[in-house]
Amino acid sequence: MDVSGRVRSLLSGLRPRLMVGAAASGSDLVILEQALSQGLKPHIVLPFAPDRFRQTSVESRGPAWVGRYQAVLAQVRQGRAVLEVLGEPEDDEVYTRTNGRLLARAEELRLDGEEIITLLLRPAGADGRSVTDDLGARAESAGLLVLDLDCRRRLADRRSAFVAMPYGKKLDPRTGLEIDCDPVFDRVYVPVLEDLDYRWQRSDRETDTGVIHVGMVEAIANSDLVIADLTALNPNVLYELGLRHALADKVTVLTAPDLGDGGGTRGAFDIDFIRRVPYHRSAEGLTDRQAVQAIGALRTMLAGAAEAARAVDSPVFLWFDVARADLRARSAATPAARLEVGLRQKVAAARSQGAPAALLELAREVDEAGVAASARRAMRLDLAIALREHGAYAESAGLLDGVPAPEGPPPLRTLWLQAHALALRRLGEHEAQAARADQLWVRAEQLLSELLADQRPSAETCGIAAGLAKRRFARFLAAGNRPQAVVQLARMIRLYRAGYEGEPWDYYVGINLVASLRLRGQRFRQPAANDDLAEAGEVATVVRLMVRRLQPSMRTFWASVTGAELALHEYLLEHPDGGRPVDGIVRAYAEALAQEYPPEYQKSAYDQLEIFRQAGDPPQVIDAVQAVFPDRAAPAR
Image (cartoon, rainbow, N blue to C red; front, side, top):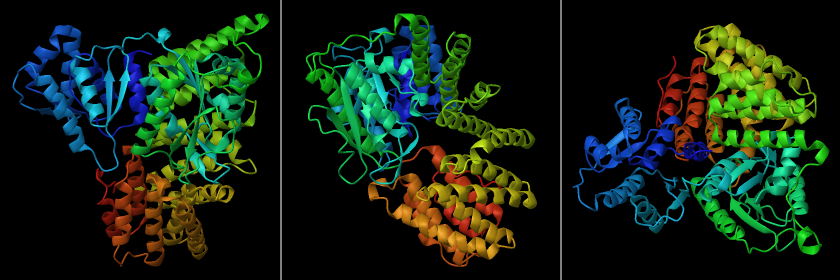
């Protein structure tokens, strides 16, 4: 992965609200370009006028860099970036003074609960005399986290790392909570491994379903480092950890989440010499402070663990006379195995970089490769999910269209159908033509129909399908077609109820069930309206219990917004016309919005309120709540 791809991967995972930086040729412009590509609005700080800065800090690198500089400044004129000119005098200290003012500006723009991370791109072993070195020294002296990427180290020269961990939400057997595993990978493991200049890969989604393949075993055995995340004591991760200990003497590091009870994941292994790094998090993710602390702790451990003289950490190699050697496929299987291993390594690298063109090109290579059809299908699924995660919904759906879902293990088939349906749903959400969006959503419903026919469909499957119905419900409301809207509302209730009854601890499906029942009972007055309202009250009690049982450290954005929305529903169940003050509800939403969250979270919560308005909830109530959103969109009336 080139340095631009590494920066893109970091920003995609860390998801900062704001970036503050200069615009000199080299690392400044590379980071600015990637920030803009991620939809951030950078705050660009220059010591003096842009034309003079171009002459002093850009032109010496040639016309290509001048073009990139001008392209970035053009974003300021389009309102996609902010430019601040300091008016510093031109002397020998101007750039180091600007470093100090740049860090001060970042501190001034920081919101409560946010952390400042300094990202540097410089060669390893720098002499400490450059402007970049000065920025790093100032940041470290201020106690800020500094991520330092060696921008000249070739991919082949970087040590290899493998991260064994679950995907998505998994049920923790100790607490009974569903834990979202992905934020730790994005906000802790990727930053640490990039900072230490590893070439890394994560166990793929095929492995997460329990499928064992040659690429996974090769990576576990031969990687210089394996991180095993013990979240939810996932059996696939424990199996991978056992393989690692059997095949490699070192270096293996365990990480264990502390969900607020002070204990972390303990009791899985009782061997003193196995390195273990605890970290604090909630069931939904990490705050900025928790992420920074986890990065620091893991980086310290890995920096020491990578030393050549570090002790063996495998009980197999410590207690038995075993010699480590690179694992190679049997000679009879070598051609196919080597081809599959190589392709899987390419897929892992492309997933981390996330450039849609590269992902699609690799998909074509996978299709033409002489490997087993099951392996091709699994790699295609990984690439399709990566495309969807980077907003390339049409390309993601295209990879899965026309290819039968796998007939193998049910978990892999479930993942395929869910991924395909979700890509089509997202594509429909961005489709301006209602008829075309409806076609996409009908296709998504067809894919989900088999999963929904299961005796116990998961809350996730029900949530995806109900989300489709909710989008149709919203479109029919906006078009004034209430008869069709109520049909979709009934489907929403049926699906959210199925998810809630299967997993009552999932407050996401619970709060959506409350909302759907209340709207039908109050705003559409169906024959069973009283039953709807009674059930809404019953489910609301359970949802409130599920939110309250979270310890304070676990009440992140979605838990807080769920609590706020629940207060809104309870208020409207008692006062359907909105005739009483709503100060408590407004305060609950304001407290939720004061927390750390990506921009799309706010939009989702805002759009939910807009659906309530269009369904007939009192405008004065919805207006009062929406007024506390910091970046309000114009209501879609």
